[in-house]
Image 1 (tube, rainbow, N blue to C red):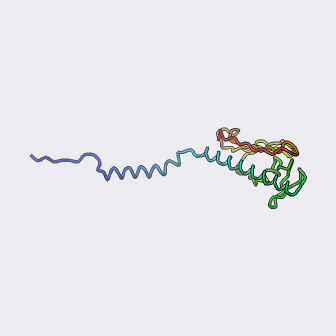
Image 2 (image 1 turned 90 degrees about the horizontal axis):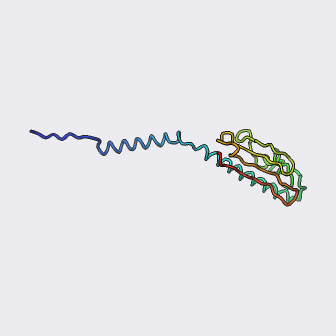
Image 3 (image 1 turned 60 degrees about the horizontal axis):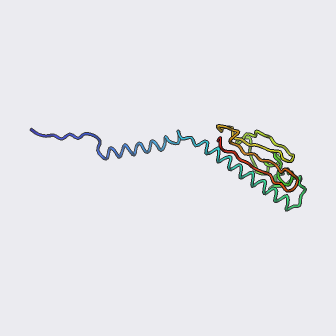
Length: 158
């Protein structure tokens, strides 16, 4: 009687090919299912925060260097920026112009602000889980001299 050994199971090459195919499929499928939106929204708010701070400081420095009045219009690279207390006002003609923020495409302005001392302008991302917890607020100077504008970001609800 002859003993015939029949092979059962996968060979090593077949096993490796299955692992490679699963790896390739997961590399293409994972980005479709992973939610990277919250990190992107938080990064967008952080970027806007940096832009608002930098624009405010540049406008402030230029205003002081030129010896302008606290509420004079500053000229930043050909763009007129309204000022109050030597800092940009909290409106479209102030901080938006200084930071070159495009609120029509990227952000929702939930608090329009104004051109007076202590006015605030709040930017939110509408697609956030909690828009009120995914925002940045610019507050104009609170006095004519001695106080700076502030920029506060909240990214807990992005």
